[in-house]
Length: 318
Image (cartoon, rainbow, N blue to C red; front, side, top):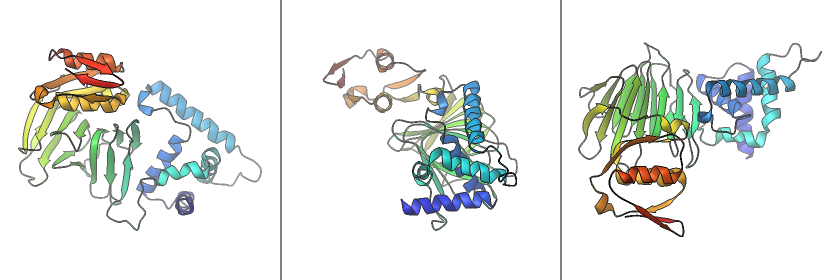
């Protein structure tokens, strides 16, 4: 804990002296955003988000109202002082949970969500990111110099800030997605058979990581599936709301039924068992806004004429 406090104080000092790099500034603003925000950001409308920002600004102003002795203090210093007063050093150490210091030159910055929360981030170039449950994003200290390169796992939505000079590159296991300014969704769960890229706006090129010449161009409204076993690409039209999960819903884009059940179990904290052989070859293409687990489960089972029983919190698919 003492070491974490030292790191936090070092960051705040660099911010006050205006010596912080883009990555450090990004970490600071993400931390500051969380001071007044415990509800999942993805549940808010734009109007609600602005109200939260205004509450935070008001809280800062209440802590930093000018006094005769403070007239000459830089706004940065007053802001940081307010942040420390609002949050307290102990809670602020969250900032360092997944942050590697300059001694770890290879790893850089890593942000992760847990099994039951969706996280919203802002990268140093103003690219917006939303992490689904059990997901992570990592980028190096050279991010936004020659290019903007990130690595992801789980499911991540991007709204990429346009920059014609610095391509935005996402590494997801065995594939690479390149974009300039666009909005897209990446599914790269380690235990699933496919990696999926759904494009909402703009244009992206998808490559196998071992071949920059074998590329697939994706246009808006289309979904690319990469089969891990065969290393093959298939492109189809998007027929579901692929971003339903960003507001607390669920989205299944032609995934195996077994994987859909696993996602459902994780989302609602359920214990579901099923006969894998009986479900082989069955897929699910559907999306749900916020709904009960019973409604979601019944809908994905109905298409395949399946039912379930429940006993002592154990759900069995039949």
